[in-house]
Length: 90
Ligand SMILES: [Zn+2]
Image 1 (cartoon, rainbow, N blue to C red):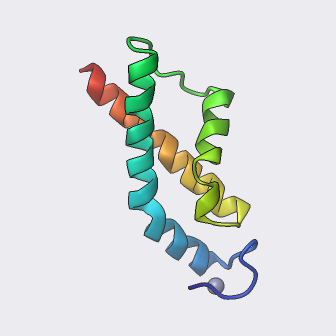
Image 2 (spheres, rainbow, N blue to C red; image 1 turned 30 degrees about the vertical axis):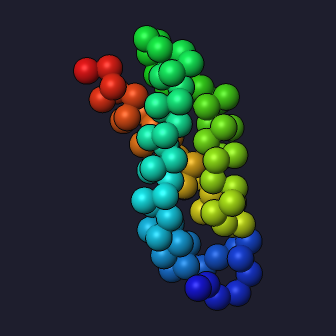
């Protein structure tokens, strides 16, 4: 699936793995937003919250070992959760 060190992927493997996990992280982001909406309904999405960023990173740790990959996946997960949150509000 990838060449060399899984903790330091080449640019191409990084992109490939990122793309192959996109659907999974988006689904996790949506499920997370639904979960949050059940426990803290009616609040604005806490954009830029460090707590949220940390949880998002924890939700992707099983998807790879390269920190750059995990960072990109976590950001994508957070975006998907935010989008889902906004769509629930409207
Ligand atoms: Zn590679």
